[in-house]
Length: 291
Image (tube, rainbow, N blue to C red; front, side):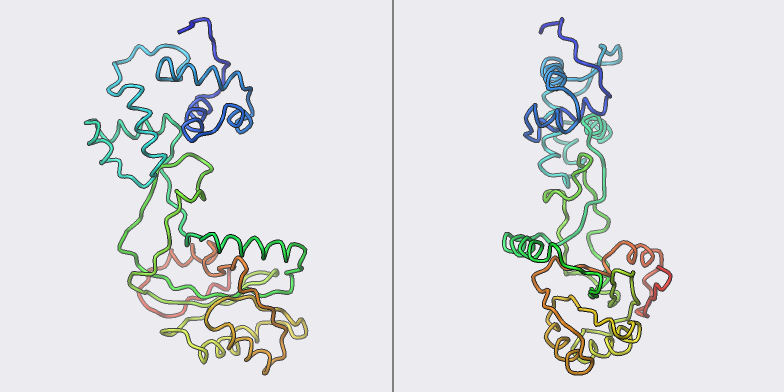
């Protein structure tokens, strides 16, 4: 090692982030641009990590580390490739404590987070959403109503978590796919527009066309201002019955947004967080008029 190489001073967090980004396959130039530092700084800290197995500015006088630099890289790489891996499984592989594994991960800039949950998109889904975004790039959505249903369920998985670097929440490998299985608690229907969220209504059992038109008649339409002729955006098996119903009965303008990136109105945190604060004891409707 060339002891004359003195890396530029940066924060400990940025030092570890350099290593994590390099392990993820980024080039020196990409890392420098991401962190707003020079390429030389990135290169020198990478060399310090390669030569010494750490990114400390001065040699520690503490007790010897229980894991080697190579093992530290293996631990980080294992979590980068699968953030949902159990810490206990990693610790048993290296015969060290779970606390040691957690320290190595934190040192490398990894953080313990709750994963994002959403359906994984296929290539066809992504193409359709891109097509929709381009088609409606300059479209005025201020007179559009978005509506959707949400079924709140109790999952057998419990509260899952993962280890990941900051700012990587929505990378595909860090997303927990939505699952349809589980014990159903209750379902609600809601709507929103540019002016804000509307009412929530309870869904009794499985939604059908009759119940849907009843909700539109008794919940949605009475809360609208007459004469605005809003458009309604929705994609599900009830779409065509909704079009027929509103066109014949209320002469509302309808546009087919079936390939749009659907706005999950009652999946929004402004709705879900207040719901989580109430015990799911009954199936009675929950109104959030104060949202």
